[in-house]
Length: 336
Image 1 (spheres, rainbow, N blue to C red):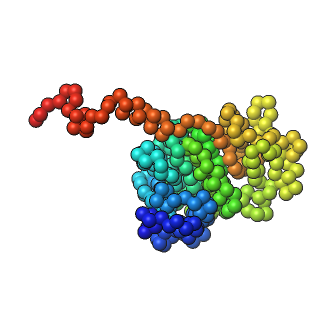
Image 2: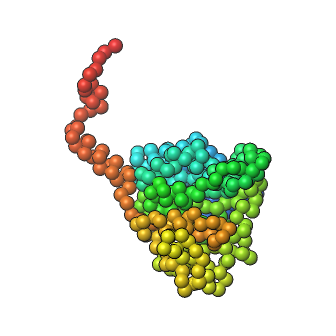
Image 3: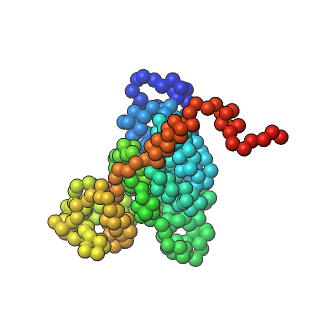
């Protein structure tokens, strides 16, 4: 990483974000496509290498920092949001990204994940959702469908799965989006939008694990069925889908989604203050409705670090200019 301390004045290229480490994911893994999209997006944004940090937890996705020629921190299971929060507060000028998986973020890391969203720290969280534990060889995860047969659920999982989008909405996240590993242009555009957001930006990325959960999303991502099975969320545009865009989705008076004609489709508003419409779409049955892809929510709210910095300034002003030694000797002290 020689470029970190002496960044070149020349425009950065996509290759400048690639480290010299051999990428070690299974051949055909969706993580390759996500890595490519991130590197392309970062090059378009001209992110300074020495001011960009990738923080990860544990899992296949968490090898990500090794493959980016930025700063990186491979932390412990589920705690990446906590470490990233501390990093952002210690140095607010850093551009901090969290890379995690459905098991890492939503199981052992669930508490850290929801509170990072609640606080609205200026982190960008990319959650790779393959609906399985890949690194530990194929156990069911918090997003695996009910009835999923795995090594840890030989008779089928009895758990109801999390919807990461619905969980993020419930936690009060200010930017929530979804994309797919093989939707290259859409994924890159979503990363660009997440980067521009002030506050916590959360992106769920449907990612295929071709070893332990191959084809988890092929019922709606394959080219032959994609037009009929995916609805794009585009701000200010109707929720239409189909090869000729003749079908739509709308909400009834009870805010329940229902299929409609294109003419009756609802106009999507990602900036709606009330998250009810986004929640309704997040909880739509995957088999009965088209799968929504795009930005579910994008609103403005004060960031956690802005409040933290303001309080620090007030505290320093009240304290005056005491030295560390003077602060240590204040109050009840004794010598032993």
